[in-house]
Length: 222
Image 1: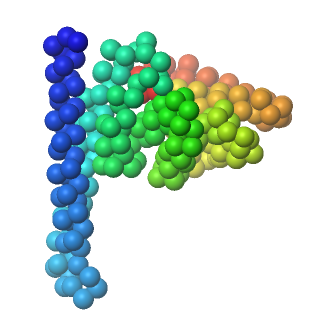
Image 2: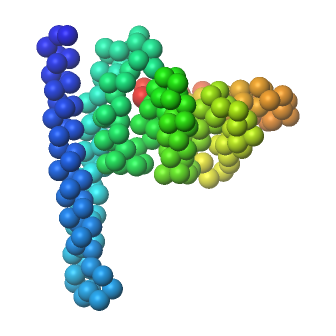
């Protein structure tokens, strides 16, 4: 292990040690939230403290992920995903700090499912959707985990269909295109040719939009 990698890992460990302090601070802020008999001033102070520590939590989550992401891509890029268990403690910390941090759910769900911890992987994928109900990435992730690792085909198709609805949010056009391709794969596997044609037509429209805008793909966690 070279000096750079040791430094990166040491930084992650140090940040993990801070997570406990941040979460403890959040608990203190929760205790500051007044009950119904409190004054308006007390309510305002309690809410301000809560909002401040929420910002600290999401910032700490982003820092933790940004520390581990280069290790994931630069040093373990060729390591099979199911062997990358080194990420799980950090991922758990990021989830605790920021339940809306999407990348953690799908990375951890695939690591667990591929290590034969299927129930845990499914539950994590489901939790991701529960905490981020309009995330296209997590809807598709849940559909794939269900389809590939369980016999819950009907629910997998339902989640795939949900990923196509108008309120679903995608981070960019490339993610949307890839997500729709995964949805199409589910429909193809169950023999729904009408749905395959419908999704394929939408993918062509997305692809045309990408070409029109000249949008480059963005690297992110798997």
